[in-house]
Amino acid sequence: MSDRYDPRHLVTIPVDEAVPGFSLVATDGTKYEFDPASPSADATVVVFVSNACPYSRAWHDRINRVALDYESKDVRMVQINPNDASLFPVDSIDGMRERVEAGEFVTPYLKDETQQVAHKWGARVTPHVFIVDRGGKLRYSGNPDADHDDLSQNAAWMRTALDELLAGRELSRTTSELHGCTVKWLP
Amino acid sequence: MNGSTTEIELLAWEGCPSHPKAMQLIRHTLRQIGMDHVEVKLRFIGTDEQAVAERFVGSPTFRVNGTDLIPPGGSEPYGLTCRLYRRRDGRFSPTPDPDDLRDGAIKALLGEEVPAGRIAPARPAGS
Image (cartoon, rainbow over all chains, first blue to last red; front, side, top):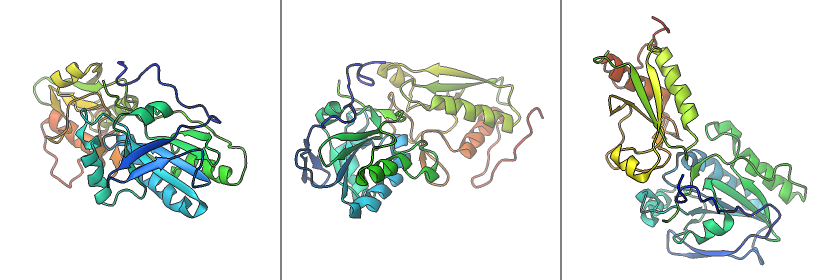
């Protein structure tokens, strides 16, 4: 497979390592900044997603539900679309805005036009979930749960990781096998 | 059966993990409609150029004699990607709704239209 679809040099941030910050623009033009050195929440969830990816779309409602359920527990979530929109126009900022305006997102939906954020974080697929603690360290990296096709899974891996993190416990699962669409990298 | 069709082509891209499930799904469909003697050939699409040449809108795609069992919408671009299907209950999925696949297979292999809203009767395997 070519590097455009599966770059061999891509390295996902290891769990317990510090994550890099980012500044990206949301669909409404608002700039969103994440500074892991001074986080604004007990946990920050960053999810790389795609409009064109069936796995992303299948998990979408479950991811949104996590954002709503944990908002009052001082958890913040953003969703980032890193895909090269020249390949799949639904992943353009216009395609993203269409879904936001249709009320499909309960979190900021950010475009990673240069793909630098996806590259620095090592996002391999959509959806790829990263959970970061208040100290700016990565605590979970993986899929939302074990099966995109089973609604009853209810993003269990995300929820368990957040529950354990917020309770100050060791995480029982810090990574998962990644099932999804590859990120569509710029040539 | 349409002509001498004895083959379904399953087009896939190795970057998408859905083709094993797609293979299970089409084999199950063929058993369901009593056409399990039909061969399913898995063929991988590997480059952007090949995707365009093959009018490949994503993995998995099922074809009989070059005709898609579930025709894509006209605006779907050709490329190496996972194909976005919509189930009958509205959910998005990397594989088609089993009933849509069954209807498409019946039409392509048996030349029968399945009216919208009607579920085709399942045929026991080997009948």
